[in-house]
Length: 398
Image (cartoon, rainbow, N blue to C red):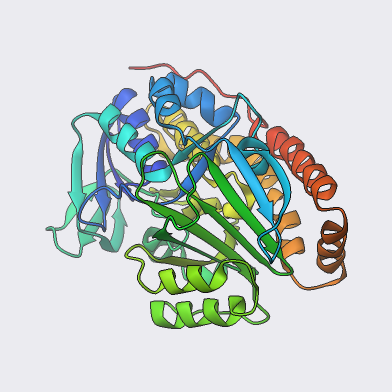
């Protein structure tokens, strides 16, 4: 098989899934990751539809079931802390009950790495330059000596360095929703065990949860902004969050206070990536680097798993003929990606200021339980349909 030596940038879910299948199909993957170790922390993520079948084919589905979150109940509260609705955690997360799974991102990555066994990792390093020739792609690293690989695959997320080096600046492909999200650890002062709490107010959303034996809880915040916010400075990000939530009621004063002490503060803007092509020459993108659906879709992880499987499978089926494989990958994945990216549009409209969003929140305050259950059930149907909108091929192994 030609073009066997493949460099993958990014040891997240997309990169680990891709490395697993490439190795299984007879390729020699190398993973480069800018963090010094595998990131075992993070937030809870959903697994649905065809992604679950891929995880079964990887032989790790039962491990994921064993390590899924123990959250079973969701409680919706108003600004005074009064319970206005209760539902299952699956319904709250728009998961098909008894079928879809929720797991902490770090736990999923650990399971995937263990399934990979021995491959080459370059932790604490990143790609700084790519130059292609007839022999392959010469890769210059921040720390390691330059090397030539047959193929390079960017699985390095929304702010992909491979995409920037091979295709151009992010702003050429990014579609901002005007929504920001932040996740961080807080003390479990709400005493959560097998429950999570949601608090909705116009243009703002808060979810607090605690998984299994974790000593601390997680707070996930989402909110819309009137003008683009581009700062990467955590101090400015925290000041923005404080301004947005300072008068929103409920437990926000304690949550905001805990935010300033959190060791794992995460912040980003919600953006999708739309590209006319996901490949150029020997370089190709997968997951959020190519087609971020945003967390608002609930499908970012599952789409990344599906994309990694299809890309590896198409390379195997084409016996390493990357031009043929990349074309097959795009043909199969683009309709699936389009349908799943569309899931974020409804959430974005609700979050943004306007008659539609204000109407939803006004109605919810009048008939909260009925309205919330209605919209959650509607979202489950839409998400389930999109999550299964791909026919998986059975690629040959070896």
